[in-house]
Image 1 (tube, rainbow, N blue to C red):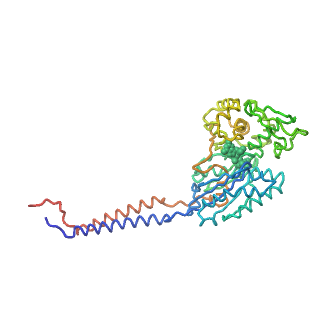
Image 2 (image 1 turned 90 degrees about the horizontal axis):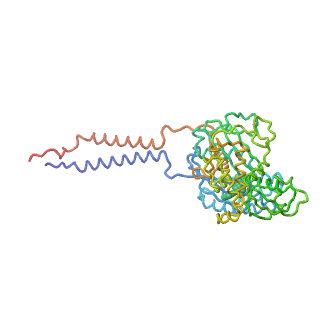
Image 3 (image 1 turned 90 degrees about the vertical axis):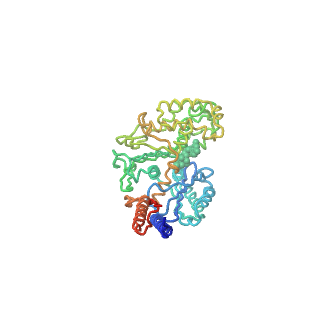
Length: 490
Ligand SMILES: Nc1nc2c(ncn2[C@@H]2O[C@H](COP(=O)(O)OP(=O)(O)OP(=O)(O)O)[C@@H](O)[C@H]2O)c(=O)[nH]1
Ligand SMILES: [Ca+2]
């Protein structure tokens, strides 16, 4: 057979050119749509709650500030000690308490990005109460906190008390943003937040235009959709303050000992009147001439506990079509709900996050749990903080009563509630919604969507490159050597 001298070099050259062309085209396609190195931006929010402060660090791709579902929580830090409002008599300690978490944030954010990273502090019900009680003390706490935060290299954007409406509305934004419900215009999820000093309920209601009770109404335009949000924050109805109210109810005669149905049989701890009544939620009810202390003893009776808990709700007056409690307007419950913070801590501990369990069974479980002796509870839960452990019977009873009698959840719609802590890795709470709002990261109108998604561009260009390559080969056909597989005549 005759060997064509062109055979090998031509094939190799064409192949090499073709491969280079494909690689070049695909590379161009990739680079045109995406920066070579993804850059990130960061934002920090400090949640100064009544019981403690937590730092949340968020991250998002620098290119696409406007896109939903892209901001993620990459770190959180629980500040040691109590909430900033508890430092009213030694404000400098409030500032100092934040140092460790702030140093952690400094390590997490690349130094190049420190100066451009916004830092916000939002305070909730604890500071609302302190501000009502003693506004100069609350100012001093803020000064101390501000001084401490400004020492860090971030872009400090201020510390302030959120209104109850903001706290409720931003919690709702967080839940629906993380669930990707806003950009897609899907049916939204309501938000239930139970803190130490206040509790919030927020949901979209189609039967409510906002005029009936304007203070409970927040309207948003997000990604081209209008939302009419009902929201209410009940100050003093966080679980720590309700516990004070329940204890106040039982110590009105100034006794030296009480048998509390919301605590386990055998529980016996000395409590001080001055401490119990040291809060604007109960201070006006302090019994005159009470002794210094009382023995707080447990009786472990769910039904009686529920009766005492009921006394903190006022159902008698409502000047609207309908109310939740304390004369507060509430439209009909609508849709599903995410219940987070203490709702989750408590129901998770009690193994009651599964809301397909019938309400009646939940009550029976609590009845049994409350009746368990304190000794046994301590034994069964080694390593759990005693303060938390002692209060789950009370907290579970309060949660159930608040949901069913306060907000009017029934055995039919109880299963619409989901007890949640995180959504896709980010904590449920008001902080993310607050930051998204302050950094204008949720546009009012839907962003223009590109004709093709990134992957689409890459595919189209790749296919075009392959077709070009094949055409090139075919066009060179006349130059090809005669096929060596032809039958050979010997
Ligand atoms: N069991 C348990 N309780 C917790 C935990 N963390 C916080 N709590 C309690 O749950 C309640 C609510 O906590 P948070 O949601 O942090 O409340 P907060 O933000 O400090 O208070 P607000 O300013 O009213 O929102 C408080 O009584 C806390 O003491 C936890 O990890 N486990
Ligand atoms: Ca809170």
